Length: 269
Image 1 (cartoon, rainbow, N blue to C red):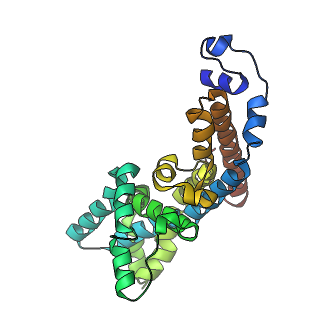
Image 2 (cartoon, rainbow, N blue to C red):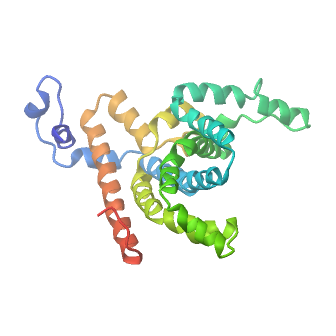
Image 3 (cartoon, one colour):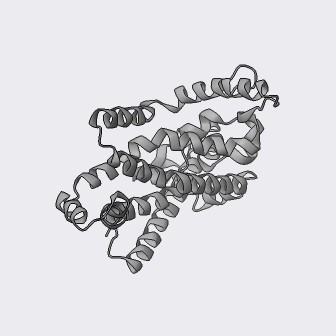
């Protein structure tokens, strides 16, 4: 919390945080008046919304599918394989994906050209970049994200399924009337947090994937802040950007929680 003061200071290294003169809201005005700020803000919202749209339901679907597997060994193998990408850093994954999608030696382009198509520079093409960004993010997080839903599924009373079987319910109806309703509280809480995080773009992923050719669709608030705040040593500006993002995230959580509680009995407070 002490560092937040920097957002309202004209920081000078020699004077320190407390000794630097106050700047009021000037850092926020400088941040938002930046030439690239509107584009970075727009890109953040688009990319984060796409990740929410495709990335949020993916772990739920995977957990439901894993829950239906009855072969224990096969289930553990699938679970382990789905968790592995979470432990790899974006630095490593960026190198792997750039080789896989390379326009000259990548296996994807080798398949495309062997079928008579033209090679595509996926990571340098604005039309493809967001698709790759979202799909790789979903692939990396789907297994790890399913853990909390699997834990919720394991807590469902098995006598409910036994009663449903006696009543003649098949697997599909058991899922509709027992499994999914039991997941609603967890899904609600996770959704509120996911909406709150819509403004927090993944700096590690974008920074390792993007390049000047795709700045128009890839430059997000965190990379924008990195360039103007950290690289140019404008620490007050960088702190103002972080505070701006956190205030929006907190507001989104409060609003989403209020809306959800209006239509259900679940919420984070």
